[in-house]
Image 1 (cartoon, helix red, strand yellow):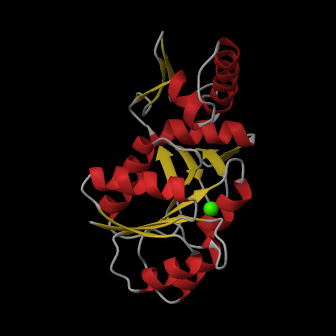
Image 2 (cartoon, rainbow, N blue to C red):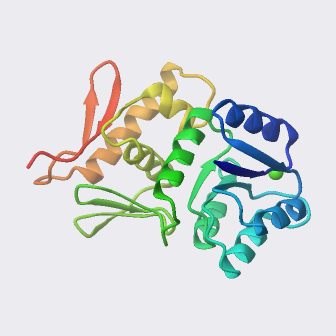
Image 3 (cartoon, rainbow, N blue to C red):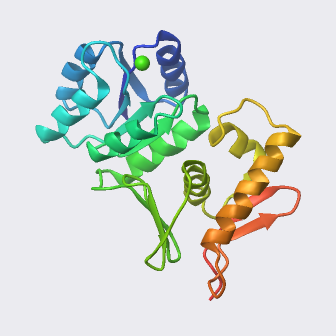
Length: 227
Ligand code: CA
């Protein structure tokens, strides 16, 4: 498997190369948008990891041009913390998935495996469990077709739970991947619990199968409702 990493931050680029080579991927790194773009044009990669903030030719320009020229290589976009708008634009421009920096390497691997499994890019990124649907490009959620109003954080939280459907998600994971904090603490645990309660109230409304479950002392779990 050939992966092209387009990332100007040397520390991140080096960590990605080491980590991915450790997983037996073949990795090429481009440290500028220009270099990355011309390498990407060769079309010989299975996945491209693309940082959006690049000097010279921006990640978005690269992505748009590649797609316009008909290149369908799956692209995983890296965006800065809180740059929600970036993700939306990135997905609209033809990215297949995105990760917010800083991210855990294990999460990156999981996303890459999913992209490689999928083989070819899909039009828009959607998550679905039971009758709950999330459209990641437009940042909209709905249950049985009824729109659910979510704050940005609630959306991120629900998205993370859906991506890990059937797996127990710990508060530790939510701390790192949704709140982007390095370590857990009681105040943040309380914040997480409050958000879970709010999201649950919006998603698991009366009369609908329960999708968000609490696993006492461990964390949370989203799974298909019982019929
Ligand atoms: Ca950058």
